[in-house]
Length: 222
Image (cartoon, rainbow, N blue to C red; front, side, top):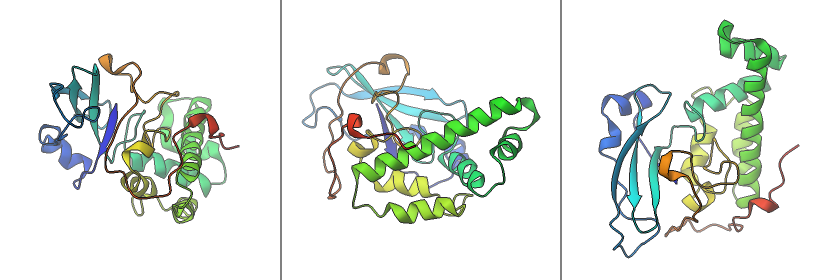
């Protein structure tokens, strides 16, 4: 299970300082009263940014691992959340998706492959924002959407990062990647013993008018 942790430094500084060694998960998300031999479980590397690692913990009773994902990282795909947002924001103001895909991926990949890559990102962001709108109907999502529509990414507004930091963990578990941690109908991410079922339990959720987490009732955007 992935859990977002707010990091105040850049990705480069996080790597330089080996921030995964100092981040903390105070207790087991499955057993608030303790007694489950909850402990650190090493770390694993990300493809990009190169050199970045993710701290991990393990609950021996629940047979489940928990990874602290820095909030600036995209979930379910390599790279930064801001990079995903930038590629989508640029597309909204471009004359053609082909031109943007070719510019973003460069000559090392064919144009049809680059277009498919970019369309997957666009669909993923639309699905995530649609899920946020459904799950948190009183959240002023229009402010985020308008920022994205005007190219608010580009390292300036970082709409997705703002959403990542504003949504409580139970909601992020129900939001599709790369914003949230729901992938292919699972809460888990495919990382060795992290495969499997299990429903997350959290305390202290934000006081918002939240809909129950039911992905079956969330219809994908057109």
